[in-house]
Image 1 (cartoon, rainbow, N blue to C red):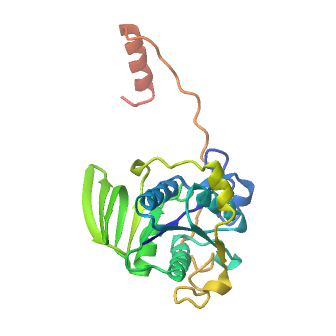
Image 2 (cartoon, rainbow, N blue to C red):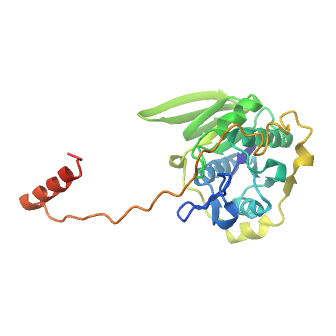
Image 3 (spheres, rainbow, N blue to C red):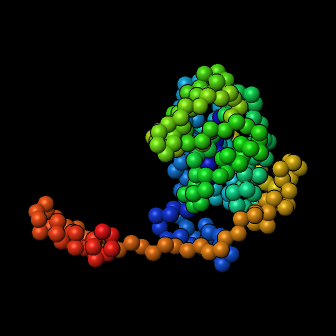
Length: 266
C-alpha cells in the first residue's frame, strides 16, 4: 500500500499579501508555509504508515524553493518526495494545476491498494477544487471533507463533514480523499527525522519529465492554459480596534442597544 499526499507551499496570509500586475500572487516577496489542511492530510497518511507500515510519498507543484517544504514532510516521516517544477507550469489556475499534478501522480503510479490524499483547500485560493479535479482526471472515486478515515484492506470508510452533520461513505481503493483540520493534529518534526530527511529520495519532475503524458498540453497548463481570469486582487483593509463594554447593568445594556441602533444593526 502506498499513500500519495499532495501538499502546497502557500503565502503566509497572516501578513501583507502582495499581488503582481497580472493579478497573480507575488509569492517571491512573501513568507511561505505549508498549507494547513495539507498538513492534516499528511498526518493522516503518517498515522496509516505507523499502523500498517505503508509507504508515504509527498508531491508538490511549485518553484524550486518548495523543496524545503518537502524536506520538512520527509522529516515528519514521509518516505519519498517529488517536486513538480517548471516555468511552463507557472501561473496555473486550479484546472491547469490539477492537470499537472494528476500527470505527476500518474507517473509516480497509483496501484490497486493506494490512496491519494489532499487538504480540503489551500488558504491562498480557498477553492477546494484541485483535489476533486485530480480525482476526476485520474478516474478515481473521491470523498471530500474527511473528518475520520478507517482503512480495512482495500475498503475505506470515511466520516464526511457536512454543514449540518456528518455522512459516512464507504469506497474501495484506489481512491482520493480530501482532509479537514478536524481530522487530526499534525505532528512535529523530530531531530532524528530532520537528519534522516536529507538521506531520503527527493525527485524533481520538470516539463521534460511530464511532457509526453496525455494530460500535459501547452493549451492546458500554465497561465496561458488557465481558463480562470482574475478581474482584481487586493489586500483587504485591516479591521479597526473593537469596542468593549463591561458590566451587566441596565445602563450598559442601554448603551449597547444605542450603539447597535446607530449602526442600523437593530
